[in-house]
Length: 171
Image (cartoon, rainbow, N blue to C red):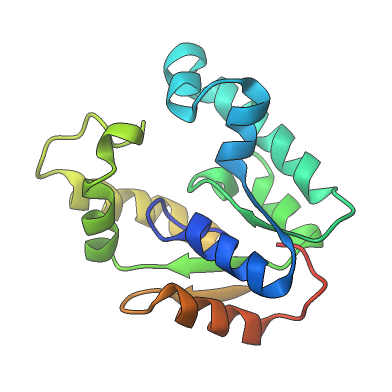
C-alpha cells in the first residue's frame, strides 16, 4: 500500500488485511519498534539519510517474509534508493491516490507528529503537498493498481482493492 502521507495507507491496510485474513504491518511502526524510537525521533536524532537507509533495510526484510502481508509503506518509501523496484519485484502494489485538498485537510490535524510538515507555516501545507506530490507521483504511479480515495469510505476502498487483486499475494 503506497501513497502520500494522509492518504489512508495504514487504515486501509489494516482493514484489507482483516478482510483477507492476512497480517498487516505499518512500515513506520515496524521501524519504530525495531529501532526503539519514533519516526520523529529518528529524523531529529539520526537524520533523514540514516532513516532512509534503515527504511530500505526493513522494507526488504518484510518483502522477503514467507507469510503473506499487507504492508502500509511510508509516504516516501517508494521514492528512495531502489525501493520501488523492490516493491514491484515480488508484490502487488496499490497506490492510494487522494486530492491535494483532501490530504491537506487530513494532515492539518496531524502536523505536530509528522516530521516533514511539522514546521510548515499555517497556510503552506497545500503548496508543500502539491510540490511533494509532483516529485513523488512518478514513483507512486508505478504501482500495479491506482485507487482514488476521495469521497470513499474505508470499506469502499477495501472492496475496490480486493476486487482488483487475488488472495495469496503480498503488497
